[in-house]
Length: 365
Image 1 (cartoon, rainbow, N blue to C red):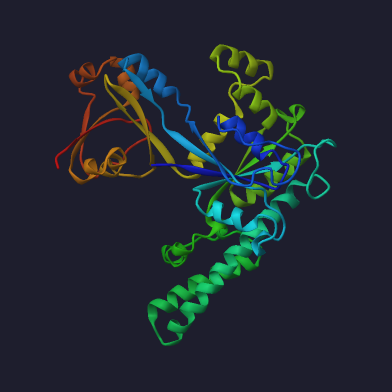
Image 2 (cartoon, one colour):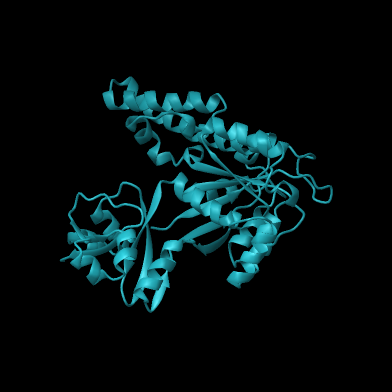
């Protein structure tokens, strides 16, 4: 399954710098608004130490990690919901992504212009929140107008749908995001076709200077306090440092560079893990002489669904799954040894795939 994250934020907060660090697709990073007019899409492999372990054990011809798409979306300004600036493009682009990476400036620098004239992460967050909420409110209002007529005729289904829509309307009018509503299945079904923007999960990236990378600062503290009320994650990153890390291709040299800054891993790795967590995603593996490969699925998926990610025929003709735990593979070294030790389990259609499972599917079409 493809995972797409949209990088958003006000102009000049470090969006394009972060995107350039994430991907070889270089967006122009400039000190003026709207340097990114069309969304730039970059693909990055998901770092996973388990792939290295399997590669050492299986010695395949190739190793294929799973990937994430990052979309650098044009900067947003106040009034975007009414078409100001590049608002219509921004809102259309963000509707397509799975999760939102909201970059917020948490550093002072007189040489980099702030679109609002001063650094205020909470105000910046609220500008984007408000624009997305207004667009969602417009979508909800339009559907309410349609459903209301049917509900007034006495249609029971329409009445329930209307009640759900009115609940979302109240949430949005109060200045809250739709995801803050503890929705029932009926509520979620009522807005399913609307693709509301504020339903999407959000990860806040606090873009800081080098001095604040480990300790944070007052801007980061303020952002975390607000994010906690939404149960959203905050990842502290220095986009300028990340862009330097991304330029280093040699692994040992990269580790030395990280060590100089007192870092165990790049902030981008943390961001990728946060994206998986926010969307309840896990990884399973297939391993053979030809290739070792990682596959992304949703937590809670059953074996046939997981098989379908490889090919629809695998799901349609699913018979069984042979499953090895990575710990057992490490202990017994080979698939044959795992089998002889009774460490390969045979699972049926009701098996819920676990993160890190090594799987082989049997199917018949």
